[in-house]
Picture (spheres, rainbow, N blue to C red):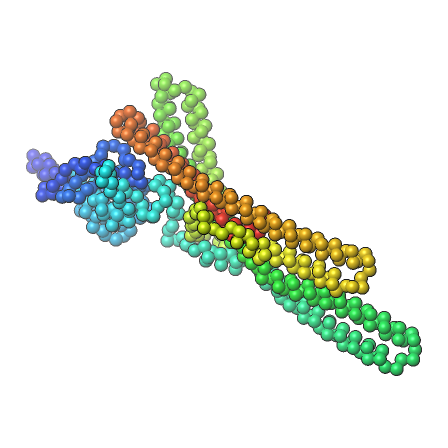
Length: 511
């Protein structure tokens, strides 16, 4: 008898808030990112403060809550934070640091005060006086359900994009080849310069000899022929020297092009990994929901409410989803290995490159000014200008060329000039085309965000129906997956925009 009484007393102390606290049902509703929470609206007001159920809130924010009934302990994982709540002592440890979260237990649920969700855990809490709704969402988060944050552990090497680019450049064989070519050009120019100096000396010697007293006409003719040959050799050497000078002046252009190529390659790899990881999260959610649907169909089939064909079709779809997950996981592993190779790191090193950019409508972008600048200064244009310079020099320094050779030289100049003109036009066309594509992606961004709002409205309708007993929990989960799909569409569009904009800034790469 004593044991029973003691148990009743202990349970009473454990399951209720202190007797001196004024506790009453709150007439507020609550949501996360505008998405209603299923089940009874169980917000409470304790001494003037609104408290919300811990599990419902954290799960709606995308976290996981594991309850250990033996320890009376809740373990929460959310947004990279690990929270342990001891229901015996009503204490909380956030990432190893003890926090005063003012935890309360009402009935069999743990509750947290709304304001502390913002102040301690870093969430935005918004109060709507008209609807008396409390809305909670992650600070500075673009999405409600879609988690775009990577899994970062103590072993993860986090790099800024500039740091990653520097690693990639240090490893680049293209840049090393350019460095080698600089040395080769310097040596070649020195040798040419020595040859020209030696030729000048020989020419002067021959000239002095010709001016001397030569009685033999054949000897004079021989000297004159040698002078003519020396003059032609001088022109050839001068032309070669001009080519070397042009190549040297374009070395920095080649280096710029190589660095631009590395940057675009790196960004493409980073975006591909991010997009694949997001796709994997969506697939995992789809598989989870598909498994539940399959179990429901099996039950219906056993009761005669679903056909064997329906069941087989659902099983095939589920198998395909699971297969896609395996394929995507393999693809992500390969993408990460490729990134590490670009960075010059070990294939299995865990690396995360930080890169993010918002979608803008380009309303302040000065398109015509940008086009004019790129037509004159784009690296590809400078290369073509170098070809024109060499061809033009070849024509001007060969007045004595045979008719056929003159035609060839002039044809080369005309070809180089046309290539330069076409190159400028191509640059302009590429810029205009990419600009319009960017505008379309920016417009699509707005439309896709509206689609997210519509998906949230559909979800809330499903929740209302569920709470009224007119819809199943599975229907709510389907609607929730719809929101996740809509948010993923926004992120996919954003990644496309980022990639195109990065290339748009280097329009010669667009072709």
